[in-house]
Image (cartoon, rainbow, N blue to C red; front, side):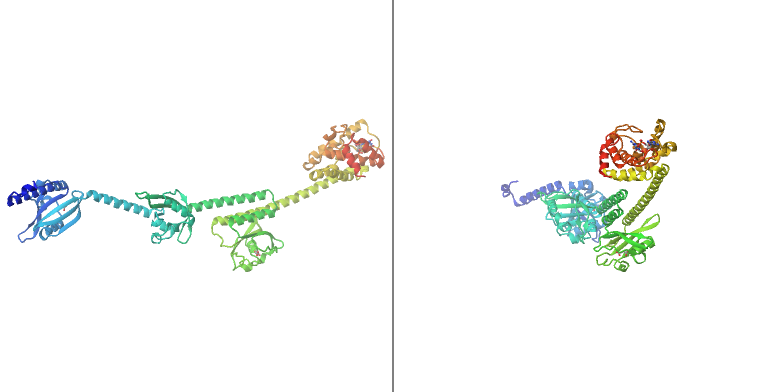
Length: 623
Ligand code: C2E
Ligand code: SIN
Ligand code: SIN
Ligand code: FE
Ligand code: FE
């Protein structure tokens, strides 16, 4: 239809045309629109009360929405179409039709399992129109969002992981309840505050980096709680970016690792304590002096138990006194001993159990003054018991209350046990030394007895053994013999002719020269000595002289015919002294020689019968 033609048509026709055009447009709209549309008429009883409404016209979209064909709807009442129309809804519809007004609301139609946004309005008295817009998709999308948010919120609030969210400006935007519990802050305390208040200032740079998109992964980073306490926590962060790439939020998720830390520290402490015990064991086993072992024990008490001062006292049962053996941590050393009856340590000995005292209330029990001025507030005394006898006391002074934990107390008991072992070891050692020494004395008495018995038989050699022994020791010292070697020279010299015990009187005491057969027997005396002494463990190392004192430098001696330095040094020394003393003395077979001749003989035999160096040293003694 062209505008130019309109003017030429009669007015009625024009109106008709216009109506027609509008109707066509309406019909187009009506049939094509996506929303369901229905035109309805209120049905009343004789008194004009609304009973129901009847469909006058519905569009294809309505049919599509409801699934009821248009042909079945037109002219029917809602009660005839729907199985169970809600009377309340029917009433509201009729009221709009009769009185005007409108309804705009979302409705869920269970029948269709869909959501509609409905709009109801009066078209003229007794009629109304229904317009239904299907909002199921929007509704589901929203519900999905709502549900998701609920899930996340539930998750975040119920997880045991503390979570904090801050924005790109490092302002705290959210904390969950685990975070509140951990830090003892409430969400209200934190939201809007700088994130830095939760972390030590040294972490500020790290915090800022998270706002540049750098994430933390298992970053161990102590959190500051409300009362300033440090909380051992491990953190992961992730950042949420805006569309333009700027940081919208940083989500930090933590893990409370204080239990882990505590376990780790406990393990480390136990290992340290074990290592400390090993140190003490080593000190005990290497026979360090008792005071050094006890010092190490006090070191460990300080290191491992945090003892601020400590002492170890030895209990002397005869005097009923306790003597300080070691102490540390006091500004004024006290060396005065304590009596059993008037000291805390004495109470430990008497009760044979741990005594724990609080200072300053108990300070009068201590001779040491100024304990509480020095800040000590706790005393523990532990008895050192070995074989059921109290040997001493380990005392510990603390500037804090004694820990209640079993580990600490067990360790204190262990240290006391080690100190007791150190005491016991020293006693064992001392007893062993005493036994050893007294045994040696007995042995040496025996040796002297033998030597003397020998001299009694061989009357003319009286005093010979002791003289040659003394001289051999002097010469041995000159030639560098010391310690054990000298002790064995001593014993060997005393016993040098012990083998003569096996020589019959007829030979030994013969006034004249020996026959060849007699010599054979006489030359056995070093072998007799060897056989005899070899069976006595502690005389074995003293065999050199008895066995080898008749060997000669030129190899012509007996019993083995050793030569030069093959002959043990003690025997080389001794033979010079022995011949010197034998020649000066009367023998059953000859008179003693004058000194000059003896010296001349030794000089002449140097390098023949004797080691020349030893002869030289001997003559230099100026005898
Ligand atoms: P002894 O009397 O104690 O003598 C020890 C050593 O001193 C002798 O070892 C020898 O090296 C030296 N000596 C002692 N007297 C003389 C001596 O008059 N001249 C020289 N040149 N050296 C002397 P030896 O010779 O192996 O004798 C071992 C032991 O045999 C002697 O111990 C002694 O008990 C015994 N003996 C040695 N010669 C005689 C002897 O002529 N008559 C008897 N009855 N016994 C003898
Ligand atoms: C309506 O009355 O148009 C909807 C039917 C219902 O109550 O389910
Ligand atoms: C004690 O009296 O048991 C020892 C304390 C002290 O005098 O130092
Ligand atoms: Fe001899
Ligand atoms: Fe001799």
